[in-house]
Length: 169
Image (cartoon, rainbow, N blue to C red; front, side, top):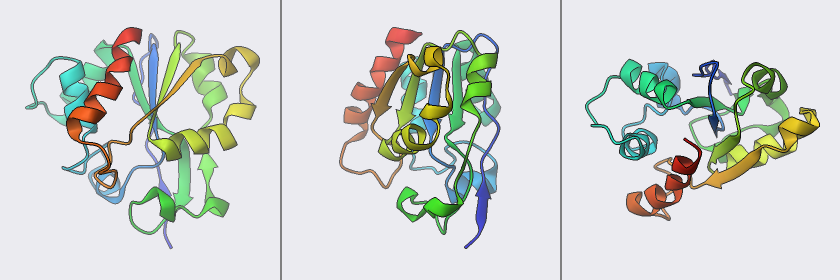
């Protein structure tokens, strides 16, 4: 089983919203891009929410997030996992990112959105207790996973739930 290492956050000093996944999937790790799998609906959802076209490069997509005060990161810094499924993460190998430091550097963050149940579960189990009281009092929201493995909802149903982000922009 190989050790996977996540990416640094996409964040600006004036970030207001943090979106957290669990750990990049294999396609993302190979491409060195968040949500690189062509059937992952993260980028199509964000582009619709931010009212822009789909023909943006990865760098343009990152810039779009930053212009809208949105940061992107994962709960896990590293873990062992075969494949891309969250259910295959070896819990004994997880190392979480340092959120106490992140929130200390990004004091304008007022809402954290989890891209799926596993990201929320990992954060609450491993990271929430490391935060100071003010950081623990941020608004936390679980959104449906944009992963193609989460097929219980249609794109339109996911988009509708993700629209809550617009209240914090």
